[in-house]
Amino acid sequence: MLKGDSLKKNFVVLPAFILYIAIFRFIYLENGLSLIIQTCYPIFAGILLAAILNPILVFFQKTLKIENRYIAVTMTYIIILLLVSIIVTTIAPNISESICQLSRDVPKLYRKANNLLSFLGDNLFIKIYFAEIAQKLSSLLTDLVNNALTKVINIFIVFSNIILSIIISVYILVDKEGIENWIEEFSSISLGKKTAKDIVKISHHLYHNLSSYISGKALASLIIGLLTYFGSKYIIKCPYPTIDGIVIAVTNMIPYFGTYIGGIPIVLINILYNPQKGFLLFILILFLQQVESLIIDPKITGSQLSIRPLLVIISIVIGGGLFGLLGLLFAAPVAALIKSIIDVYIFKKSENDMD
Image (cartoon, rainbow, N blue to C red; front, side):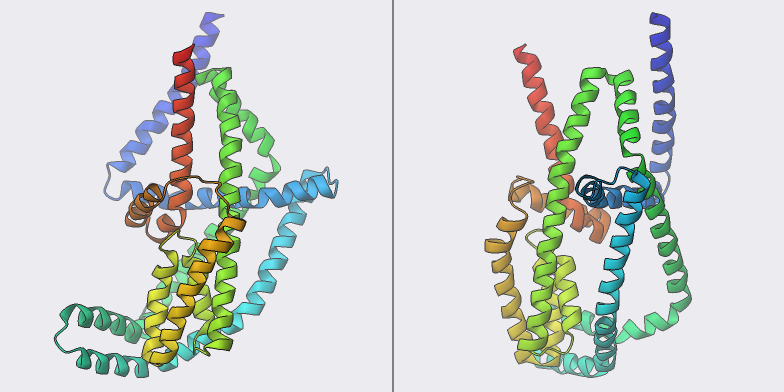
């Protein structure tokens, strides 16, 4: 019996050791870690997509009494595809119109930026900042044309990764109980049954908190983006309201700094177009940021993450520096996940010490 247990442990340890060696071999190669992350993007995206769609799947199974998992998964994806198609057909023309309008206004905005730079005189810092923005605006269309083939290839790769992520998410949703049982069984062999059950319980708790936060933050960002769009288009009458709304909605997913990160470039562009409209847009963004902080966030997102602002700020700095936009977007949830795991470890350790 002991020999059988030893064989089981060796069966677990050997693949784990091989995986450990393989990962660190890539890490010590040039750009090895980034290569691993880039290769695993579809897997991470598939897991994330499955986690986001799981509540809808559970709703279909419990509320509509659909016992067949394949039918429930199919209905889930049909509903999501219908929603995405409605959103795309509604928003795409407005996005295209705003981008075309911005591309036509680039030469005019460039001239106004040059005039503003001349007016600023010797203020080197502001001149360099505005010069960089003006240069990027003026070279935007040229880059799109010159790199057209590269963009097409990149779009094809992204499309392939999206399809692969969807396939992975489908398999996860169809066999989620089997995957969970396999993880618990694997953990039982290597860590013990009690620890394995604790890991599953903790995973459920963390998933609930993080999914509640992400879905709540996404809904809050959607509301802020829509309010920015309607305010920009119908109240201030800015030239690029769709771009304003989308930029604020996306960057608002970043806690504390997101609204300002998205607000600065669109305000500067609108100031170049019309200083009065740009100033009013700045006031609107500040007002909506306060509305979100005082009303929307407490009502929708609540306090699921319960992490201190300092930890959020540090995680955003590290995440943005290492992983760019994705790091900024997922810094707070990942920090909350790590903090929750550490809290559980401290609690278990204190329990064992008391025993």
